[in-house]
Length: 258
Ligand code: 13P
Image (cartoon, rainbow, N blue to C red; front, side, top):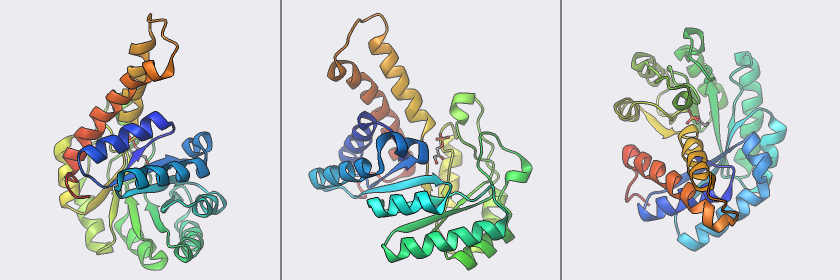
């Protein structure tokens, strides 16, 4: 999953996926989708699907309430992530069930989360495999985001996450076939990503590396240039985002799978 909040980023992700014949998941957090617009994201996803013939899925990332996820589902998102990781497990389960009932009815996938993925990692954030089992059994969530030492934004903190594969193996043993999601993919060592995929991670989320690429491309083309024409200063930012997406598609092994 590649996050975006601007059409230049969206174009960069899709153009790269087309070039590499890779299916792709586009993601917007609550903040990103409020800036971009839920309906706008769906409409442009539809246009890009029609134009490219590529499987392009749209996921609402880290939705914090049933009400907001309902809006995303109504707008036409393909999947929603309910992030109830800060809630007590029972409350997380209760709201996930409500989201799932509504999502199922509309043919939309639900991603749940057990354990916390914040902007740092702590022992107590790690997913408890027993809790993951109880959660997935009771909610029957389609996907499950887990915390195994991964955290958001590590690339910008210059701090590489230290993934705990024993925790991942224990979770996998307890939850069976439910597809696992690794948030905080930016800045994670490539070998660790490959190992996580081997052990059951099927969706890896990337945001910070794309934001850094976009911002540095923009700064380079604007600084001191006096350029004011968006179609002249945006291509450099687009190209930088494309480079990151290409690296990740290669790493995730989704080339030629569309
Ligand atoms: P990064 O910003 O660390 O890539 O994390 C992205 C993410 O997990 C979005 O849900």
